[in-house]
Image: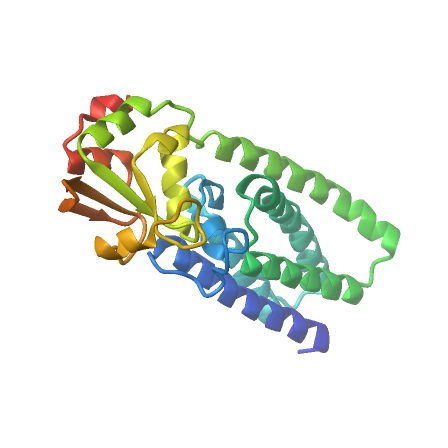
Length: 268
């Protein structure tokens, strides 16, 4: 195995590790080591609605890309190897930087590991380009339709994801939760809290809420300690300051309605 293949394999191996970890924290109710602040947080990004496409986490698609390039570097011995890897990576990079734009302008949070994976892709792109024997003009002719396809995929992804953003008004549902004594405990550094808020839409602003992190707006960490809140999001039904019922973790609205004894018809 020559040096360019070795470099591509090593970059792919690191990418598999990163994407595997991001996929894990997408599904698991655990805090990532790169959850540094509200604006620098892998959790906020990987648990947002924009972290999925057609029900699949973006990280799984990235995992598939790095596994494929790693396997190609090991087993694909054809002369066109570097050309295949270069074109594949060029295609994948366009949607990847669409997600970077979503981080910056929509989610307003930065995922260190996500952006590191894109640097790995750029590394694979550079190595494969340097190892190709084709002339620059030939490469440009080959890559042009690939880039166009990448932009098309980005557009399809945008419309698929924005179609999942909550547009219904759940004010009546939230008012019923408030009447039932439901209190929502959250943290400004909690990725699943961001996702929970997106499920409620604008109505989340009217839900009886308590901010548990000292850096959050109107923080009340003392109350969270008093009520024994050990993870967020957590929903409590309270009466006269006493806990009656508890529900922990990210929840679908139907599950909250059933738990609180509120009619699911308010969600229709």
